[in-house]
Image (cartoon, rainbow, N blue to C red; front, top):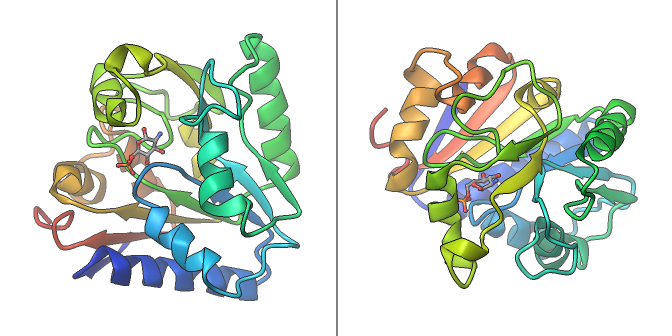
Length: 233
Ligand code: GLP
């Protein structure tokens, strides 16, 4: 893992933007994208730049189960607001949170991923070490699945909802195996709340109790963190 530490989120996000530019210059076509507060500064830099995704395809990591794409807390809505409405792609794919036939949805999304192998996958990390919505205990061989959110994830994400009861308890998420199939991985982590998870990911044993530690099994991972997230390294 190549770990890069920056003083500020802005500088870190600028470096992340350069990783995207370099990938595009090297003919990357499919970008795996992430939601959460972490990539917001990166998406803002993209929106204010002349980066051109009109020949690119995006596939997102995850989506809350039960939320329609026009729900303000859905990841579909987040991506439209923060990136897609201002930076058009050739195609944007996300899991469909409204599909209650989980077998069909999983199959649909795995087919999309098989047809569009990810060149560069962007990731954030949960305070408990989750990537996508692959919570502690996840199977490292898993592809897209309908997952139960950990209580700590519901707690962490309730800030975006009226109350914890409003946070969906399930989500569709690419699996760890899907993530590891991408050619290149870029993980961003900011703030001291991520420091322990970052330490486990970079220095700890590879264990499904800390899902991000699976990234130690990939040969092209860049981790971009601010000083607070790097404070335990
Ligand atoms: C969320 C998402 C992840 C994200 C993580 C961190 O639950 N499913 O993809 O990386 O938690 O979120 P944040 O960036 O807001 O800290």
